[in-house]
Length: 262
Ligand SMILES: NC(=O)c1ccc[n+]([C@@H]2O[C@H](COP(=O)([O-])OP(=O)(O)OC[C@H]3O[C@@H](n4cnc5c(N)ncnc54)[C@H](OP(=O)(O)O)[C@@H]3O)[C@@H](O)[C@H]2O)c1
Image (cartoon, rainbow, N blue to C red; front, top):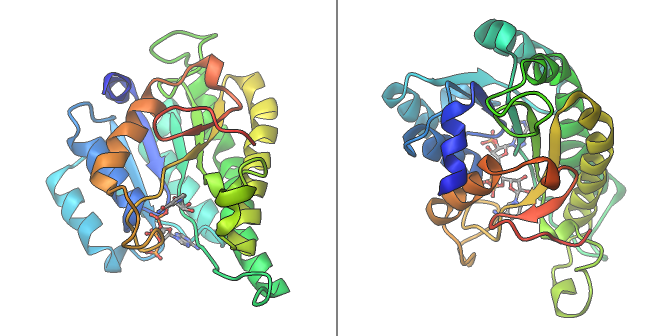
């Protein structure tokens, strides 16, 4: 858990899709893991319905629940305004684009609408969210972070896109090609390219960008057959994220830090 210590020196972390599953567990582990960031900005499209998240916020005053529907530009802009009021000139240190959907369909059942629906949430939204938060990420990066300017880390500024190994073209062959999910696989493949493109653009401002596969995790999306529980996996993910440095910029890694092929 050494990397997770870095969160204790991180002013702010924003997690999208924090109502349940991996996002909710990230907020829980960040707040209760022993090295809490200054502010945890937990976004959900329906704060009133996010009971477990509300309970966490009652226990941990550094959790701020903010409404965000990742498909609405108006909602994104309002979220940026609210985050801006909370973090002020310190900016936003770490943006975790976690919200996602899986519009399940194989070759025979896939339609154009299903492809576009999955693409909008999983690939377009993280790009639009990152664009909207860029001024706050730049503000954080310009302050240098705990390791000083010239470094790259979550203590300075970082964008973590929660992708999937199902988005890897290289791994979609042989046995691993058994998951026939056209909309999901292609949307995560596109997110991987978005991550790599953003790494070349935002790296110039000292903002670390990467795509991360969280493992096959038991959530509403992952299903009950998934071998990993959120409680086991997310601390490992946070440890990897906390330990990221310039050498990881622009890469695609798993929750245990293994570099994955595109
Ligand atoms: N579980 C796995 O095995 C696995 C494996 C690889 C990658 N991933 C990725 O990990 C991320 C989290 O997955 P999960 O397993 O935690 O899924 P999940 O349990 O289905 O949770 C998805 C989260 O995304 C939110 N969301 C969906 N559409 C949204 C929108 N338009 N605006 C705002 N929030 C939205 C949901 O909010 P609501 O509660 O409002 O619906 C929910 O909080 C996803 O990007 C997923 O692709 C998961």
